Amino acid sequence: METYNQKITIKSWAEEDRPREKLLTQGRRNLSDAELTAILIGSGNREETAVELSRRILHSLDNDLDKLGRLSVNELSKFKGIGEAKAITIIAALELGRRRRESESQKVERITGSRDVFTLMSRYFADLNHEEFWIVLLSRANNVLSRHLISKGGQSGTIADPKIIFQTALENHAASMILSHNHPSGNLKPSQADIHLTRKLCEAGSLLDMPVLDHLIFANQSFFSFADEGMM
Image 1 (cartoon, rainbow, N blue to C red):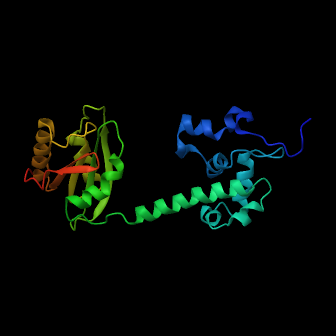
Image 2: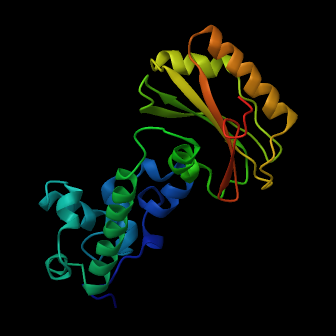
Image 3: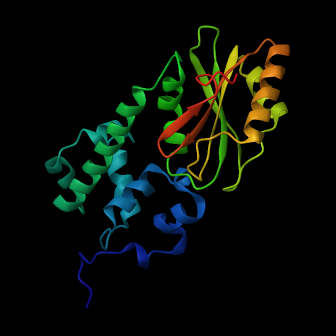
């Protein structure tokens, strides 16, 4: 015989209500705050699913995640269906999010050399098993305006279209740009294709009065700078 407080696990929910499966099939950005919180909670009780419980908690906090992040274990445990273990899980997850925001708030705002570019872009290339090509757009004072993924490919390379690169730069009112891509092989040495593309983009940048200041290759938490090596 079922008891009143029997837990309803995520596996027993209707398929459309399973946030874990939704994350796998649709991606994390397509989940609501309540669905993400429900994954942390894991289960509800006979009265409500974890998503419904999460919605109730968030509603009481005006759907403000910052308010949720300020709650203590005792305060979270006052919500019916949230015990100490679930409260600790929620707090730990939100603390990780806070620390991530802190690390991102220390981002590079102005480029003074290749090391700044490495600091700015290394997290985008970390642990990739395929190649990606990014550009960093700068103001006339070398302040970072934006970063853009231009293309991605396989382990052997990716195609960076100069038309797309300069169209992106012009649309974002950039004064100059820096190129960057990774070598999944771990080899920092630029290929002939890398050298040819860099020269081609530098020539185009000169014609458009939008200089290409550097091109960095990322591999194994290190980098190669065309500018540092006098190859620009």
